[in-house]
Length: 359
Image (cartoon, rainbow, N blue to C red):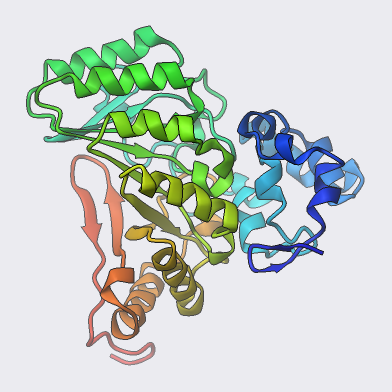
């Protein structure tokens, strides 16, 4: 039995169904063999498709995608497994009782050209693709999963470059998605180079969950491309300590060795990491692999994520205990992201927070 993600899991050779290790470690193989249908999900669970009937209407609205690698980290027998909760469809995704909206940050309103979000004076965000290796069920861009994929052509990316070039106030460009590492390497290299050639662009940043869900994507060739366009910062999203595997650690180490700082932006998720112990172990794990905790986001009020949203007070209580008990190097900033240019509102812990039930 192979130990996966800090616990005993099923033998990876069984999960691969005899796939040679070279193919298993090929990110393109992983991407092609993602779980994309209810029948594939039923097969992974070794259950009849009929038993997953409640998930069928969910997939009509919010599709599924899970890499074999990420699937190998799950405890498939446990419906409350913190990794399974992040990627398995849930009938509660069609419950909108908390008033969620498709676009909670009003990103569509702040797009001067298709796919480019300009919310803040000195930086903008380019959505270069709508595709992801794994569709995280708490995603704040779930609305894009069934849309035509933006940013798939050089012409669309060129319009973003042109906008940045004629907007001198922009000193930083964030390349996001979807997952920007899923576009072709020549296209990514060209796009980064075109942005780097603009005199007033000082810093590039990439947001990608590939080190967590598809660590094989971090290759020497990719790192060489990213290194050419430094200063370039890389932010990923580990939400639970069980995601910090040997493969994920190796991916982050390759980025760091290329001179690319790696930060982490977690999301506070009910049933995943909304406890002091869970968050502490995640933050300690990130420090051990030299990934700097950057933000802890309050889960955005996105349609289809009601069941993930913890109370803000819960997050503040967790942060206060962390603030008192762990190294400052491990502490992220707990924030609430808001639309309309208001940005990220700090949700600071307070030492005099009254106990529950007291006034």
